[in-house]
Image 1 (cartoon, rainbow, N blue to C red):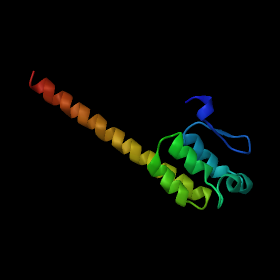
Image 2: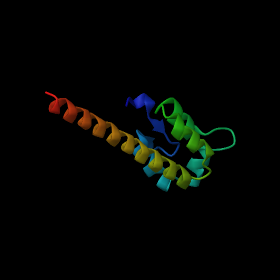
Image 3: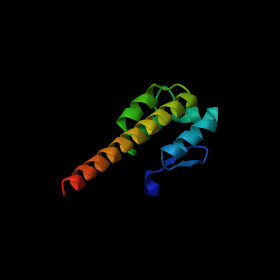
Length: 103
């Protein structure tokens, strides 16, 4: 990902992907969290939707009231993506086996 698309936390941390994001939420200060998530905005949800292009996760983050809830949402989403990836790989392998059997 290009540097211009990173998320710059107001404490100086830089988030490049969902793994960085989850790790940061595990130890983010209350001040940094409330700077980015408050009644006026949710910068994390915006970044997730606009930069990472994950509307499903963004909606979940928008509902979160604490960093721990965001970590759970990210971990759940990562697990879901991994499951989908595995299904696609299984499907490709199955199709390859069928093609080989009919060759």
